Image 1 (cartoon, rainbow, N blue to C red):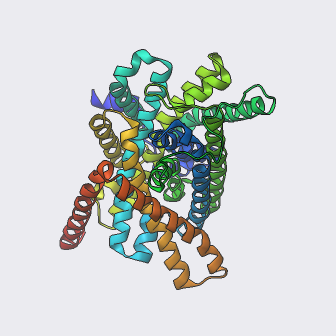
Image 2 (cartoon, rainbow, N blue to C red):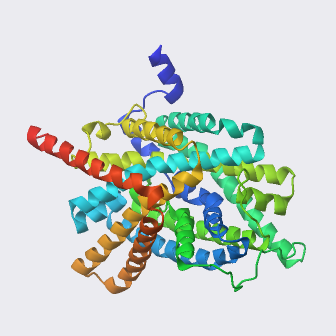
Image 3 (cartoon, helix red, strand yellow):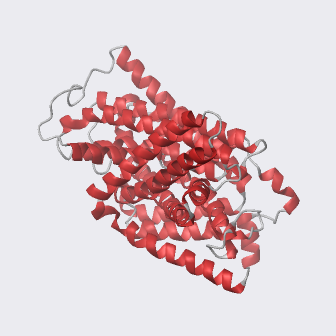
Length: 458
């Protein structure tokens, strides 16, 4: 009975000789590996504004300069991770860079952080997707946790069927979302240019807002930087690309960065111009969509394409987590079961572990995106900081041609990433403290596993 159900869910076993057919071109890879980063625009601007309105609605104008800082960090990270792709074409991203240049403990901190973060990627993406659905269909609001868990089960089954099939399935919702958001931004700007959309901002740029503090602005900036989670995923998954792997991966990363920057800047400006204020049961993006498209077909297309890509953005975690677990297992810091490939030539043990971990997080945090975001951010900005610092050490040690120029983006990336981590630590410790409990336990487990394999000489 189980065998029949398994064949139905994941398909017939593939031969090892068919593995080459599972490699991805740029078009499919963008859908598979960029959905997390691209979908984050659905909540990135909202996270900035949520912090600012705790002071007053007049503070919303500060979202514009804060978005500019986020875009500077995005540019630095894209340039830096393109360098990492060419320097480490076998994948591994922050784990490999940190291990080689900063020492094994730093590598394990980066790797452990990303393992947790990929679970949070799934939990955040699915929870945000569920919120988009309940914004359009309020009757489902009280069923958001069971709905989110059901979505995780469906994505798990899709990934167990294999890399190529999951990429093919993702292409339609991802590119539909890209088309709809592009239409939303262009339509919004056209309405502004034609005078159809009058200025409804809560305050003009430069207005003095009583009570504004540096601490509040730093908290808002750190929250908005959650839009950049997922940028590193392509560097972890270079082996998934067709040859030339590094060239294709770097080009896909650049394309993703360009689209993400355009979306984030456009949504943030439209939110400011239209004077959108966050409410509990309706997302900011939903309010922007209703203001621009009205209550017609395009609004519902926006909501359901957003729900689709947010739910399926979890696939970035399903693509990157198994490869990272494989690299840790190869170095004997995780069980060798994560080296094994399943019937469909994917690392099915990694896929199942990620699925169970993300379901646990959704249940623990009641499917509330705003509660998951701070943990999500700290889990990725530690590896960001370590990987950028590792590349600085690498360039200084090897001193290749133009190494000082190459170091600039790494220095900027490391500096801002560390600053965001420090902001999260000092201003949001009450929200992120579980991370500092989990990480020492993970490091202890890594070293215990490594000691076991050394003693048994496996």
